[in-house]
Image: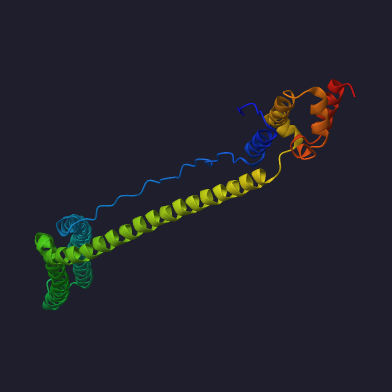
Length: 298
């Protein structure tokens, strides 16, 4: 600390008071520790407008529409293949069973001829009637069988034509489905947009809370540091701290600057009567008195 050399005892005490205040009562500037608050990046979401929602819904619905057509086309083609195979099998079965009946008739007629020959009746009317009877019976079975299979084949062909008609009109058939799919998907896209908006809101809101918690934590740390600072500077300085700060050096310089202007004997006599100096000099007071005693030759 810089101060003027005292020329009177009053000036000496005034300067000692200033020194005391400067070192012991002065406040150290404290601006606190600078903390940087966090700023988290928010999610940005631009919701679709009505036209964009409709466009997306149509695109999804069209995909559904194409899939339904493909699935249905595959299903119908499988049915047509099954019915075509069934129709072919019916025709084959009819031919096979007709062939069996022809074979039965042939065997029956052969047996009649052989029996008639053995009996000597090969050209008799009885044999002719029996042959006609057997032939009529087999033909009746063949006609009945043919009618049965033709009915099944016709029925199968009708089913094939029905499924073929479905294939020919499948796009038109699913047009109603496409329109309902657009309505359904429009609602789903809108719900999806609302869900995204809600998730973005929740996420950004959580960032607000995190930033606030971080800010509160900083304020708590700063408050704790302020308290510690106040506690530190509310505590009296130790002698070692005062020595290091230069307090005793300045106090001794002030006192000796005044008493050095006096005659040594008077200086010794006066300083021994100034017990108040011990307040400032503390342990050094006795050393200063001893110094002026030596100077006075006492």
